[in-house]
View 1: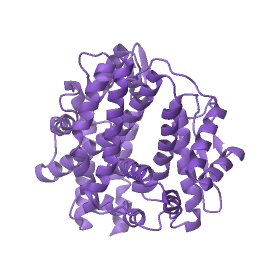
View 2: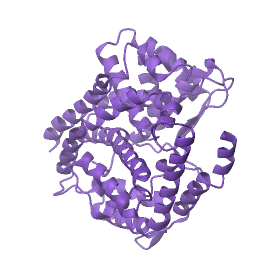
View 3: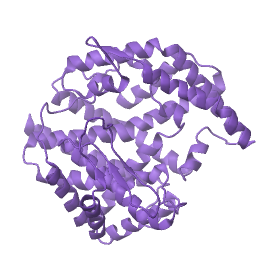
View 4: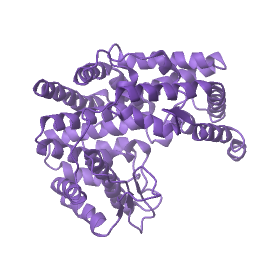
Length: 441
């Protein structure tokens, strides 16, 4: 039966997902007289020019609406296919297959969701602060990623290397030794070159070979954090090689542990060393923006996913308007009155590939980020012996379930209290931004 399902998926679900990818991949978005790709226009939402952000938002919305009929059909088809597969495999809920793949259970995921949705007020509090910092009368959905500074200081490669190496070595000498190997043995491709693709990642190979880091270093503070992030992955992959080819890889839920933790080490170092209050606040605002995108937005998308899977099974085929209604319900719950959601934003569910490629995937982002914030909180409060236990956690790779690995550090991820520990760390970031804003204004 599994062989039949796999063979049929090539011309079934997989074909529709491919159609989705090719449709949006080939789409051209008109902006200021140019025909641009989706990614090129999305990047404009991070620009300081509000008029440009507004035009980019309109361009994206226009094309999403033009494509709404085929995209709605794809969503309906893939949701129905998931329902059929879940019935055949006897899963009780649409999310159960994803939980199994992530080596976690519904109790843990429910505790995570309950904790995050219970703290949506922190997001609303922050966006009211950001609205004031940007000197806006009204914060709209296309203003969320606006930067604090129009120009920022640049950092050269050797300084970035020193920052990461120093942060990692101070945390644990072994982590510093491994990181130094990446630099000394040229395991990092960081230079921007003609024809080189964008993005950043750490590629593990086989246990007998070291990992490689790929990135594009342009001297921005964000690039230093990206370097720390990818080297965190690299250290994790390097240490977990000892588990062998079958158990060295980690599930999605813990794959980001070392990367985000490493990023946090460097972020804290930067916060201590930056002198300019505006640059310091801009760095903190950027970190809060990233955390909201990784934790709160992903959980709101998980709630949207839950709504559409449930509605598709109970109501049958869903209209574009029904998808948009369910989308806006979850977005309004997240942002409250802190962000004005435009009517056009209602169609913005239709371009997100995760819902089709990997149903249920998005909560893993929040899981990984809050896991790290909780671990960093533990490290801040009880540093003695923490680094050694943490290195053991990384060395375990995928040989044990996340719940069991974290339990060895004296923490229980099945309880809301664990996730609240990470959320408390986020709340302190918001409080710190509020205090710093009083000085900068």
